[in-house]
Amino acid sequence: MEVITKENEVEMGKFAATVGAEAIRSAILKNGEARIILATGASQFEMLRHLVTMDVAWEKVSMFHLDEYCNLAMTHAASFRKYLKERFVDIVHPKEVHYVDGEIDIEKHIEQLTRSMRIKPIDVAFIGIGENSHIAFNDPPADFLIDDAYIVVDLDEDCKQQQVSEGWFHSLAEVPEKAISMTVHQILQANKIICSVPGIRKAKAMKNTLESDEITPMVPATILRSHPDCVIVLDRDAASLLA
Image (cartoon, rainbow, N blue to C red):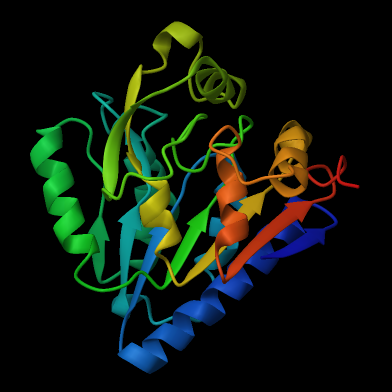
């Protein structure tokens, strides 16, 4: 695992996008296509803003979505489908888009997503880390053993509070209780992981992630330390508590 600290969120996003674009281009050169995973949330704003400007043959890229709330309309401001459509899909028009949809038959939808995802390896996963150290919506204690591609999870109070604090919802009561999340196991199958983490509110999570004595489900992001090609990109605020 490589940890990079940039001066601010803009520089963090630009660096993460540049590294990611290079990995996508390499996959296209090798395989004639690339398959990527995209996360959402405030942590990905700058990375995505820069990624869509990169010189990439997007018509050769298939995108998979990391997670989505159950029973939340795509028109809702907090919808991650809406987020990705507006910030990525409608800008670069990738070859394929595999949204996670929490408004349809979830069991059948997960089966379909799993079939599509496991046809070929994922080349690059762009993810973040939550204030409670979650990756995707795998809140602590995360299940490191389940090998499904996606699961339905119950969101914990810290996770829901983060969504309110970031302005996606007006109150905790508005945040859905459940979400569809890519599993820890599936995230780790990506050939390369690029993790963008900005902001002072993530500083404690990053200290726990990088300085915990062990890899533990109680700090889900510690599992990234086991991946052979993971780049974590921080801004100064997110890195402020590191030794």
